[in-house]
Length: 482
Ligand SMILES: [Zn+2]
Image 1: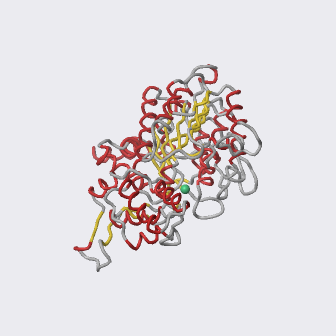
Image 2 (image 1 turned 60 degrees about the vertical axis):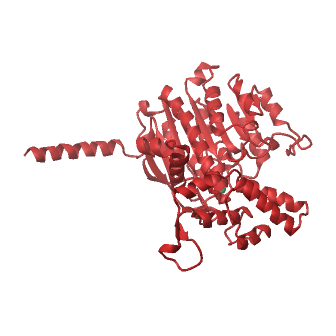
Image 3 (image 1 turned 135 degrees about the vertical axis):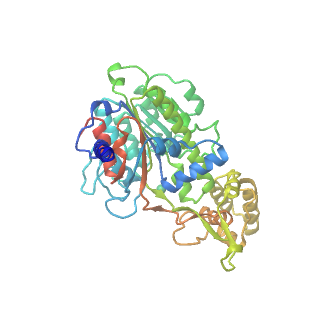
């Protein structure tokens, strides 16, 4: 009797819990669940296998728990999202970010403009209309696909000049990353704008503090900031010179200071929407560069730490950790050591020693590729190129054996397969794969569902399996908009 009563009570409780944590979006969440501040931490090209790699390498090499898996996934709510665009099965970053920002599918390459020409409001526009302050950070150029799709509209992700002009009109309170070249007119050193405008001056005249080097972030004043730390993308973490470029964590910490700076109290009472992207995790994938990916996953996790520290003091903050799609089918696996028949004596499995091996790498494959290309452009002959490759490998990838068949392909900039689009980086990546087991299926994006993990008020909405357009819809609900 007691037992069956217990069962009924438990069943009722379960029902109540399930209906409470349901992810339906039709019902407006209670005001207590509407966060004041929203921070979206966005690792481009990252989903399950990358997060798991971040956890394993962080614990083994950094000897630190990886916050994305160990805090967000363990203690928060998490779910999965589709990534496909309107016109294909496999997405690019523009279409994925557009869907997540507007709630509408768009074609690859489009920035928050639907195939029929609609320009639905972006999350940054919605936040601004709700009286929130807005900020965009990326390690790419600030007008790159993801930050652009979260804030403005453009027929093409390549229309950098126009995207920067729209930023000036939108006036985000904070903009940080690379890309000074489309803020400066052609003729000025590093400038590429054709309209002759100096956007840095125009932002300054609207009251923005301008930061061009990391130390500028030590003397923050005011409540508006434009930080441009490179003409193009910021460097991979593995290559970054901290005197020249800030880390993602440094930019995030500066952003939180600027966005909580009191000026117009009626505005700051409504909180902020901050988008923080590490684009290098995607680029590392495209290059098939496991060591660079590892460093940038840790750099991302340092930014996650800054956000968590802020949330501790400001519990009315929702933090979401996510990405847009998976890049390059990252696939740590086992393989044959040689081309001899498979068997117990001829098997190599990724193990701690292989992680330790790549943790000693000091240069990204992108950097090595660029150096090789520059040398070839100077007219170096085959023997000089061969010697230079050996020098770069011993300096940047110590211990890696240069295998003759792949060396030939590297020096001739030949692809090992049709899906190797980034050369010679992908071929060097294949060399690393053979010696460590860190393989890649491709050099492009894949269909893997994207992980969304959330902590804070409203986080339960992100639980379950959803379309990526639902991401925008949920955040709109959480900002009090339909
Ligand atoms: Zn990509």
